[in-house]
Image 1 (tube, rainbow, N blue to C red):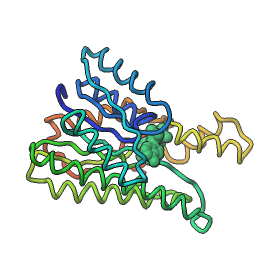
Image 2: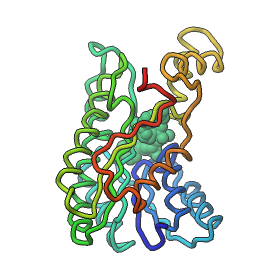
Image 3: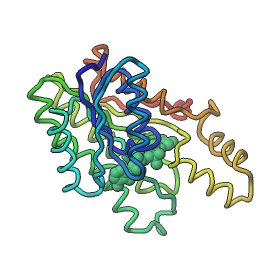
Length: 262
Ligand code: NAD
């Protein structure tokens, strides 16, 4: 379905971003990965996912730090140079920090706002001109249920994710008469390293097992008592890229085991 298209997924060396990169490659898209840590393993995984689906796609990597606008500009120029253009932009990179507001470290606030929110502004402003010129583009922002509701001790994350949902709507309006769409995905709990850290902290704080902490974490928010998977989120991203979603604009689509239905 996406044969010949090109995608850039930020924060795709792990978790949800890697899952979405694989999902897009499985549909035949060439992909630029980004993120910290090992890049060769994730690149090989994405190539293998494409090959399994019968596609021979190009997979490139750029290690831009999403808190740095100059790095982001370099990454966007790299993607345009290597793959010709960016048809599908997935703004996914994100970090978390959990603390009461009065104790929230100022530098963590600044980095969460930069990585989880401002980076999406920078990639989007740099991707839009070519998308508009081609009259086709997909911007998919990985927000969170925390873009729609709050949880205690997540001031920076909740503020940034609400900001991402707002940015999504603005860009959707500005592109409404074009073939470019912008939408947000709002996952509930997904068992990635970002959430595993929160499970581990809960287990340590209460002296309970990882299994008990996991059940407690899910039980507080997700009626389904199940994690959403990166593969399920990738399928939603693929849907946003499909022609069936040509007129899906500015939505914040939660996939959250019933979290938001309460
Ligand atoms: P993760 O920790 O598994 O992956 C985060 C990715 O972002 C990694 O590739 C990491 O290297 C990259 N990254 C972090 N800081 C970066 C920086 N400064 N520059 C470039 N890359 C950077 O986390 P995840 O759970 O897969 O989270 C991905 C996105 O999904 C985040 O925006 C997160 O807020 C969102 N999300 C996650 C959940 C969840 O339950 N896991 C729920 C809702 C939303």
